[in-house]
Image 1 (cartoon, helix red, strand yellow):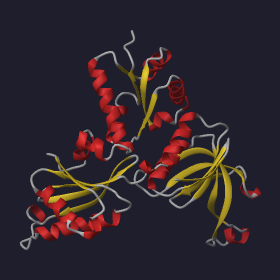
Image 2 (cartoon, one colour):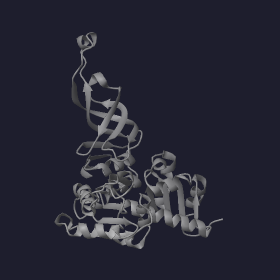
Image 3 (tube, one colour):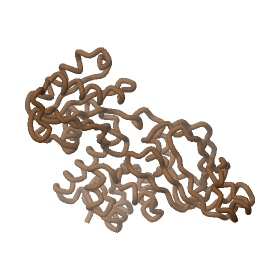
Image 4 (cartoon, helix red, strand yellow):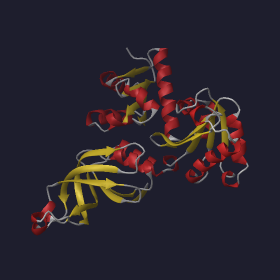
Length: 345
C-alpha cells in the first residue's frame, strides 16, 4: 500500500495488491468515511418509463461507512455506506463502493488510534507483500500455495499421472516437475523464497529441478520434510526454527509464533488468560505482555479499548487473521487472549 498523503484526520492511499485490501478492511470501521469513485446509473424519467437500460457513469462520493465486506483471496473489497458528500440527487442514499488493486481512496476518521496507525504503517512495509511460495508434494500430486498477510492461498494443483484415477501410462517425472515450475513461474516477484514440503524424496527432486532453471536462479529454494501433503504441512513448517530464519518477518509466521507462545503459557499455568473479562482484569493489573486479538474483535469498539489500554502499558499487540489457522485457534478462545508477564490471582 502506498500512502500518498497523511494528516491528522485523513489519509490518501493507493491499493497495490490483494494483501492491502485485508489491511484496509482492518483499518476502516463503521462511522468512518471514505472518498472514492463509484459507478452509478444515470436514470432519466423517459428511460424508466420505457424500461430502457441506462448507462453508468463514474461519480466521486464520500461515504459514511456502515459495513465492510472482504472475501478472502478475492481481488476486491466492498464498502457499504450512506453518501454524505457528492451530487445533490444522491445525498443520503445508500451506496456500495468496490475497492480493488490500483484504486486510490481517502480515509477520514474523527481520530486515529495507535493500533490503526500501526496497521497502516505495517501495510506499507515489504512484509505485507507476497512473502513465500510453497509447494507441498509427493510422487502423486503437488499443491501450490501463496503466503499472504492474512492466510495461505491455494493457487494450483498438479496430478503427476503416476497412479490413481489420473493414471497415465506415459507418466513422465520431468513432465510433472515442468508443470509445477509452470504453476510457480507467474507468481515470482522480487526475491521470494520457494519452499518445497512433503514426504519422501520427491521434494528434493523438485527442488533440484527448479534450481537448474534460470528463471528460478535468484529465488532461494528450500526443502523441509513433512508427513502431510496438504495446507497443514505449511503450518507445521511455520512453527519450525528453519521457517523463523527464512521468513521471520511475515505476518503469518508471527501469528504462528504468537499462538504457539500463548498455548505454551496456558499449559504452564498462570501465565496466560483469555476472554474479555479475564483479559481486561490482566490489563488493569499491568500484567499483559502480549495481547492476541482476532480481526473481528479488533473491529468491535468494545474490544478496541483493550488494544489501546494494552498499548498504554507497553504490551505487544497481535491481530490475527480470521482466515489463518492461528486465527481460527484464537477464535476458540473467544477471539481474545493474553500472555502475561507474571501470574495474577
